[in-house]
Length: 112
Length: 115
Image 1 (spheres, chains in turn yellow, red):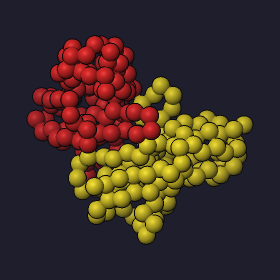
Image 2 (cartoon, helix red, strand yellow):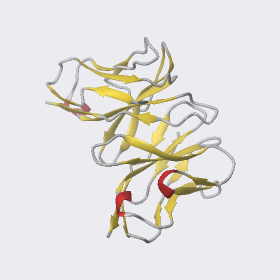
Image 3 (cartoon, chains in turn red, orange):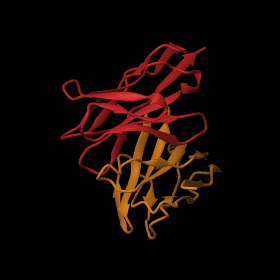
Image 4 (cartoon, chains in turn purple, red):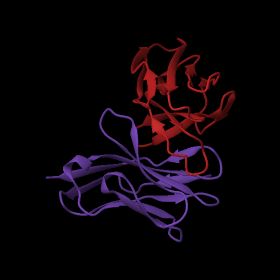
């Protein structure tokens, strides 16, 4: 069965510093990988996805993620964090089936 | 405006009293899905639908029903709610599930409390 792990419940980073939110996955076959962000009292918003092609994927709001097949990872990164990036981040995976599996979420706090 | 809407946004009910949470999308999406969000567990998929009259179970379908009679609507039905169904529920839709069109758009959520 497919699964997603986000090993950190909470990530704290100072404004202006680079940030990384980690995600590892387990899936049979080639994965479809996604990152979503959830702001307080809001639904989830799509950030970026990896389907095929370049391992480095660029998405919304300056975020990017690197697909690493050998390490089965899809870490989310941003070169310079903003206070407004503080939110709950979810990694998700879908294989050739039609259901999606989300990770437990990582709360990012960017400190001014 | 392209969107996924859910109603109600907040609901308090009692054990055993049937309820329906509606979901509607105006983007002509084929794929629709229901999730529940619980602290520390992330989002877990309840049911999904590939198209009209096609539905399938996700990871946590017990105690829920869905129907897809029209492309735009995908209601979630709790025939006999129990306290362990207290949660935050999200509906989502995507254009399809292939060809790079798998991005899901989420509704604002429905917070359900079952007493």
